[in-house]
Amino acid sequence: MIQESFSLKKYNTFGINATAKYFSTFSSIAEFEELLASKKLITHNSSLITVLGGGSNILFIKDVDGLVLKNDIKGIEQISEDENYVYVKAGAGENWHQLVLYCISNNLAGMENLSLIPGNVGASPMQNIGAYGVELKDVFYELEAYHLTEKKVVKFSLSDCGFDYRESVFKRKFKDQFMIASVTYRLNKKPHFNTSYGAINQELESLGVRELSIQAISQAVINIRRSKLPDPAVIGNAGSFFKNPEISTAQFESLKNSFENIVGYALENGNVKLAAGWLIEQCGWKGYRKGDAGCHAKQALVLINYGNAKGSEIVSLSSEIIDSVRSKCGVTLEKEVNII
Ligand SMILES: Cc1cc2nc3c(=O)[nH]c(=O)nc-3n(C[C@H](O)[C@H](O)[C@H](O)COP(=O)(O)OP(=O)(O)OC[C@H]3O[C@@H](n4cnc5c(N)ncnc54)[C@H](O)[C@@H]3O)c2cc1C
Image 1 (cartoon, rainbow, N blue to C red):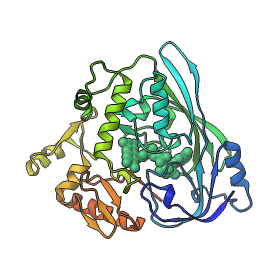
Image 2: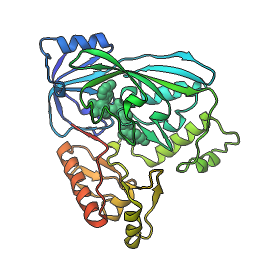
Image 3: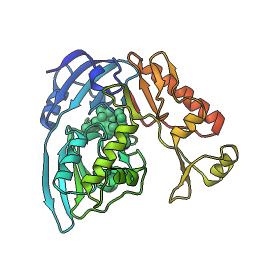
Image 4: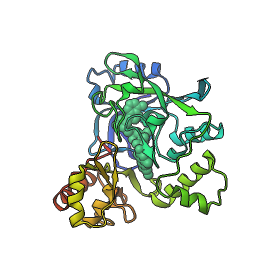
């Protein structure tokens, strides 16, 4: 059923009350094709179509004068295996964390560090989701996507997706061109534990874990995330609003003269990655609130909607933050959240 003038408030974790001109859900590629062909929705302009997952990485800054189509394609299946790996195919509308739990309960390793990331399977390749030292690309095998105007299904391998830090071809080169229908992941039969990042080891210790397992790592990650990140069910947000910026070693050395406590992670390409949240905090934004738009009091990287903020208010706060970080630190922050 196609609904008109549909409120998207419950369909984005920021809780922004934007309205979609047309809204529908679909649970198969055939249903998606039918919607695109329906008289009401027919369009040859793919930018009028927004494919929605869990709405946890989106900021609506105005009403959507087009079609919002929520992907509800379901199904999780082990499709094949070889000596070392099991290949799991999931429909784009499956909840990401439920897929992680499915893999863990089947002793399939690789996703445990990505536990509790909000959103659905279909968006996981969009920005190559990552957390606690693991990225989606580490478990990705291939995906199937439907080309909105050529009206055909295309397969993308790992190398086709152009994965990078919070990036893929679907965010840039092929923006608005594909509906991701399913993703196949390659999971390890034998786990390679990754506990080097963040407070995982500390949390494992306080859980009293003696023998490392994917279950234990997942639980540690879940506990850390629950203690650190605001729950969108309680307060509107989309997780990290900005990416962690990458700068040259020379710029890092000169920043150290002004900010002696600055923390940087050396990258393989010779550059240094900075913590965007730390830079924002240095500029005094942590805990800031203007109307219902604000910067979280515990984690400055997360912008929040206290209730009735408009998307435009959140985005203008983000611009003020970008300007002040640039003028105080000489670093330009880039948004991670998709502005629609
Ligand atoms: C509290 C919190 C914590 C978070 N922590 C992390 C984290 O640790 N790491 C991380 O990487 N992200 C994190 N995020 C961001 C977010 O959870 C992920 O980016 C997630 O993958 C978004 O999934 P979604 O289904 O909600 O996508 P949506 O917000 O619905 O969509 C995101 C983008 O993808 C497009 N899209 C969605 N589905 C499809 C599809 N099937 N086909 C084509 N395009 C599609 C949308 O049009 C939009 O541009 C966090 C968010 C929150 C609220």
